[in-house]
Amino acid sequence: MKYIQSWESFNENFTDTEITIDSIEEFVDIAGFSSNEQEIIIDWWNKNRNEYIINYFPFITNEPILGGFIGDNTIAINSKMRSVPKEMLLFIALHESKHGDQTKKGTFEDGYFQSVVDGDEEKFLDNYQSLEKDANDYAINAMKEIGYDSFINMMERMIRGNEHQGKLVYKMMTKDIEKHHPKTFTELIKKQIK
Image (cartoon, rainbow, N blue to C red):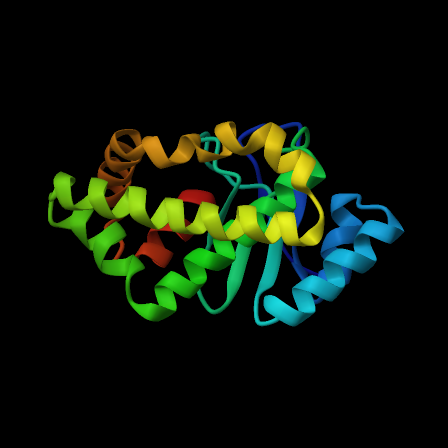
């Protein structure tokens, strides 16, 4: 595990470090999975998602952002969300890795980011719901393959709630784009969380 840089959170009593997790082994250990669970997750990840690395650090935003894809095959997970179940951390990593796939295919940047820059709320809402559903579908199916059917059965409705938050996300992104003037979605996410 490599300690890269310290980040202060908005809570003055809480500090943490950004951790680049060089392997899925480190991530499942930090997340708190049992040794048996770790073995299953590691095997699945190495076969299906091994090109993605995970950064684990406290995001500076006051928004309840659990994670994000921040480019270069990197997923960021918010370490301030201490009460989040370990299964949700895995779900977020899987969900954000799918956004990485979407970015590589060229479907994410135009529909998700550029539509907000252009002030085209309707285009954003159409793309947002589709891209979030795709990422949720992927992560839900992956969680079931790994063996977390009961977690998904219990949480799927709540997990899919983000698919219907497009108007809220559009407003938040519009405000942050006006504030930070990012050129790409990755740049916007980095400015929102670091």
